[in-house]
Image 1 (cartoon, rainbow, N blue to C red):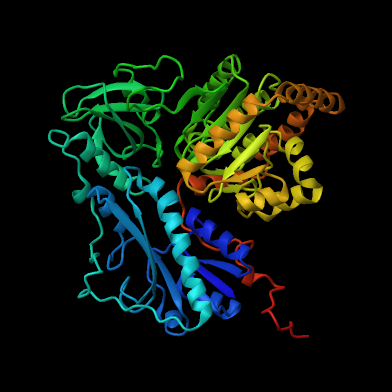
Image 2: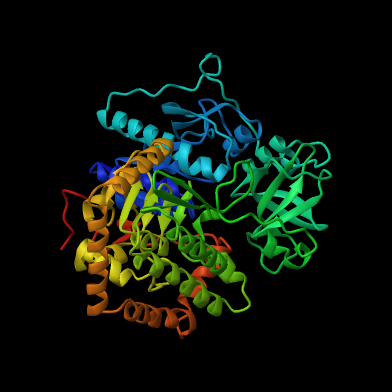
Length: 576
């Protein structure tokens, strides 16, 4: 079928659904929800069999839903209605939640039901739940609904609040007064639920150091305590604030009085003020035995070292890259045989930290420092001769993070995670991380050109098919981690490991003799220098709009296939 996506942006859920439908043979085109007239034009050009709205912030115009079946993906259970569905569920600590696929009608979220999928609601940030449980449930629901639509004989169930099966209800937009934290009374669990429910957007309106700000990215602390509301500690990028029964770490804030009106690490946003807060460092990167905030941690089992690095949104700033490089070098000195680079649950890595670059006194200089820091890490991984290295990609991965993963000997990717191994969406950025060395041998020259030019997401299955990924493992994150640990232990115990490592060192030496890594890096960075310091400001403009979340003004042509001049409705020909 021809399926048109109407969506606010090409977010993680939209990307996943796009990939799933394309892999099943559907022709999918995308139009961003910019204006009614733009959506109407997209429908006229594409002539879709079905319209799917994975992520909208306003209603589909009546001129469209009256004439076409439009399926809305709503992150709530049947009967739940309103724009803050997931927020209310998290803040009220519901044990279970779901996703409903319903048909667009005049009344918002009140159309007949095509599919519903439910899941246990773990204690987590809204953004994490959205990328994992919500996306998985939405994928199952949309695929089921598309199959039902294609069959042609399915009758969707009208929404009936008299039915005992309908447990949801109409809820209003959650406002800041609904989210407000009372530091003198709220427990750690309550504070965590409130910040989790606002994570990503809009954050919790609060104050730090008597300055207005919005709070994001919270983590429970089980040891440190203090007077409720007091700032009691800082560590790397986070600050710790006491509750009535414990404390929470706050990782990111958006200052209301700042010249940088976007999210930044808390200790950077309040750099001067944080000098008065006691620093509580961890003893190395070993995994802690109690709940605390720790963005890099290490653990061992069966001669395998597991290096976790859970950076918010997968963004890796200069200092984060340097700290991770130090931890990696320490890990290579351990008496292990295999190192597994685990990344984080939601993201493995998305490359350089664009928000930190945007906030720097010289974004060009910080861009240069950041790309060199991540290149240093990639070089260390590529050059490791003492261990077999594995990138266990359990969360999404983008841009330079994809090639940082490919620097490892093996890339094992969770089924359901996505990669975006390209840079051009960021103002035609050339990219580094030794991609010119790593990519062509894996996928061929034509495959490398296609990956870098097409700018489309890659599933684990597609990555295995084209050679970028070595294995597609279980979609369930817990099962994925168990499988990774088992496979890594088997490799560490394999009798041919020493021979495999010797062959790896010989291959690296041969490659170095043919063309040194330093030459690949110099060539890539020569292009990057032009991106950062050259006459063309495309990268700086694209980064500004990305960081400041500027409204979309048009849909990129690689997504809006119906706007290509050569677009032809299947079975028809262009007029002479």
